Amino acid sequence: MAVVQCEAILLRSVDFGESDRVVHLLTSDSGRLTAMAKGARRSHRRFPGTLDVFNHLAIEGRSTPRATMAFLERARLLDPFLGVRSHPARYALASFLVEMLDRLSPEGIEGPEAERLFSYAAESLVLLEQARPGPTLRLLLELRGFDALGQRPELGRCVRCGRVPAADIAPDHRVGFHVADGGIVCSVCAAPLEGLIPIEWGTLRILEKGLEIASAGLVDIELGGRALEAAARLVFRFQRYHVGLELRSERFLDEVLPFPRPDPGEGEPAGNHLGGPPGLA
Ligand SMILES: [Zn+2]
Image 1: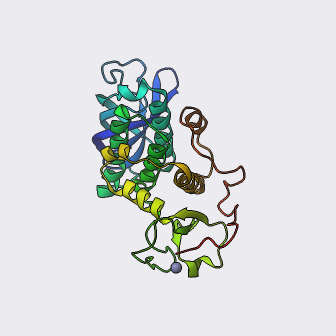
Image 2: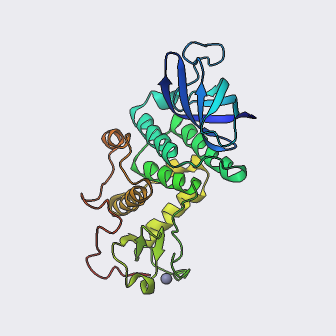
Image 3: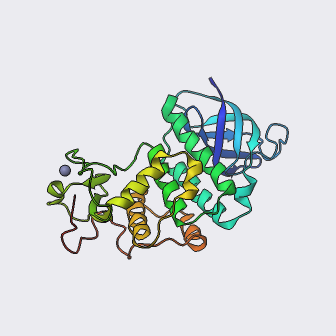
């Protein structure tokens, strides 16, 4: 039995039997972890009001190699993110991000990979405690989630040949994004491809900035009009490609935080076609 002692964000919690609870955690040192909290619904000494979604915890437990479930012995509340719970749009966006992490976070990772993923989750919740979420913040946090999960989209160079578009490229120049390849493609590589998402170079630069800066600065970025529509289409299709289905929290999020959505049927990675030459870089 190995000792588990680290920080964690609670992603999901399910009652089990008479008094136990199974918790799904994102830990600071090993990625996703599923743990049984024996007697959790009775013991207020070991789990004093701690096993709620979003909670930032200091946990202690045990795990066995190759066992699918660890045992949680104690949890101390570090931050309940009360500001997230009291505001519908914050709550909806946090629920969506946490569900995405619950679905996509790998188990058994370590070192910088685990730290990066945990930091993303914790920093996003800290940001949402104060922020007034809009559609831009929604898509930037989602993109950063994919980055933290090791699935960062390539927004600066052709994902097939590695070519970087010219430095003096105009901001309104449109480039094609290929969802299955996870990045933009140059005009040469684009020729045989279908289903490219056209997006302006300037919009890509703003999205890239949203991946680079500290999370506190995200609230200052605002996309509007066509740029927001194109970015939303890109993130939506990218998300569907990686998640494969609509997340449970997505409909609620769409209600409280409307998002320009692509036409029905665009969920398929190769489902749409450019109307004409997109003017690729
Ligand atoms: Zn290329």
